[in-house]
Amino acid sequence: MQDLIKIKGVRHAYQTDSGPLPVLDGLELSVPEGGFVAVVGPSGCGKSTLTRLIAGLMKPDHGEVWLHGERVKGPRSTVGMAFQNPVLLEWRTILKNVLLPLEIVPSKLTRKQAEERARFLLALVGLEGFEDKRPSELSGGMRQRASLCRALIHQPDVLILDEPFGALDAFTREDLWMTMHQVKEREPFTGVLITHDLRESIFLADQVVVLSGRPARTQYVLDIPSHGPRTLDDLYTPEAADQLNILRHQIQIAQGRATPEETSA
Amino acid sequence: MTAQKYMRMIGVPLIAVAVFLAFWEWLVWFNGWPTFKMAAPSDLPPAYQRHWNLFLTMGWQTLWRTVVGLLLAVLFGILLGMIMGFSRIMRDALYPLLVGFNAIPKATVVPIVALMFVGQHDFNTVLLAFMISFFPIAVSVSIGLSTLEPEYRDILRSLGASQATIFWKIALPKTLPEFFGALKVAVTLAFIGTNLMEIVSPHGRGLGALFDSGRTNSDFPLMFAVLIALAFLGIVLYYIVVALEKIFAGWAERSPS
Image (cartoon, rainbow over all chains, first blue to last red; front, top):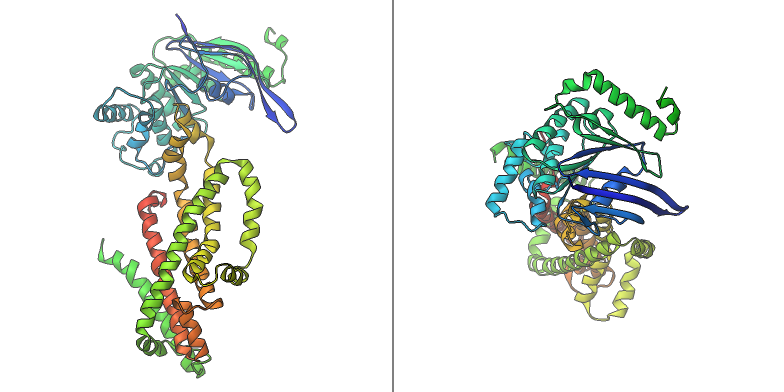
């Protein structure tokens, strides 16, 4: 299958007062259509830079980013984004917040169809009945659900999730993991998830990419085989424990606290 | 709205005003102060009665010049705030100038302006009201715009939205609460500007001139009556701003529950 997202040999440095600060160096990533890749790595290793590259919000110094067989040169309306901060517009109702991208992106939907689609998405994430509420009336988890609907409303090719569940409590987070699976079943998307949570990465993604410490390169790729619909119980199987151990060890290597040789031991 | 809510919104402030006036009256009576030391509230109605027409015409002069100065301050303040909010370089360049300008006591500017535009009293007064009140608006708008979280911008930018669209859809509405906060400060400042010009450089117009004539004629109740009239106009303008804020930035107010 053709790779929907392809990142080849990307290098990038930020210009700071104390000289260039390389954040990415030799990043490789490919995500097939319908795939869901989680990217993990030490803090400050350039994960968010990666999302901005895919979204076309910035250009890398070297290397190429391809989306749908086209070189990414600027922002594309076929991308949906959700961040750790749900950034809902407080002066709009939840429904109007979800509809925001359609005010920018040309859409074939009529106003009525768009609204129906927004209501459908809100119901899908469990926000039925909250369409006319203001963001300030919702809990953190509910806002994040609404933010997810906004990212999906214009049927993007790629969904970019930059630690969307990072600020939520553990139980709410697990609820949202289940929601993500339900959403993906009804509204298939190709996704890139940036996360600090290894359990989240193996539960949601079908491939986990470990980035090295700064400047980041692709250090390790772990495939997560699928055995049908996942449940939270899957996180407590020996297989999951093995995957988590591998990832934890890779993160330690990335942090410089372990050496690759220990892997074989 | 329930009767109880009406009571709280209108009744409570009215009672507070009544209590204040009663205390003032008592204070003057208790100390046996003559009117040249302090007039009592009961001295004011006769003063209003005697000069009612003057109060209407001069109150109007003060009001419209204040409002025009304030509107100019809003336009200029927003423009300046946008420039400083969007450009770091412009912010670095303009901030010291602005702070320095704001630090100059406006009473010292009055004679300069009066000399510069001799005889143009309306223009001078509006100019001073404007000069004294644009600063908080410019600062609040620039802070509102420059502290916009990058994610807000990214959400729209990733969809290919233009800078103008981002400004209209996100930056501007998000800055409104700060803007209205500053506008409330600017309203009272604009009144100070108008009256500074009217009192320091008397030209026979506005409540400031009425105050000045009270001073020269030793009509002390008149002076106090002018102060109260100014306070009244200030309250009216302030609550007009509050009403506008409710309409345009009501979303920023959390429900008390």
